[in-house]
Image (tube, rainbow, N blue to C red; front, side):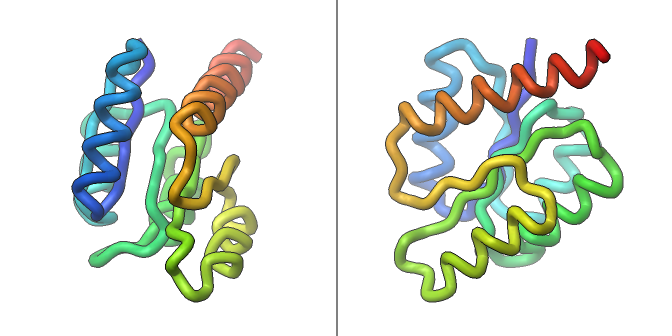
Length: 129
């Protein structure tokens, strides 16, 4: 079963993402910040990471750089809030650092599910080649 790691410091966003993804059959693991996220990447070996960009400890950009260097096959969806002043710069940087998809909060869960499905299909395709 595909493993998805959600790294998000906002408990309500983290809980909703986890509940919705598990409801449609995905196996999820959660982390409250970037430091915990890196530990869980090493422990659970997810195929997909959904990471917030602005977080305490290690931010999402650090997570993306780490994943691209140490776990290059992992697909990455970066998310950030509409209220964040430099959201466009954060999203642009996330793409430049290697995020495969970017989503702006608040987002529709249908958009998240579409992005997850697409990223896991690309991961499967990459592993089959």
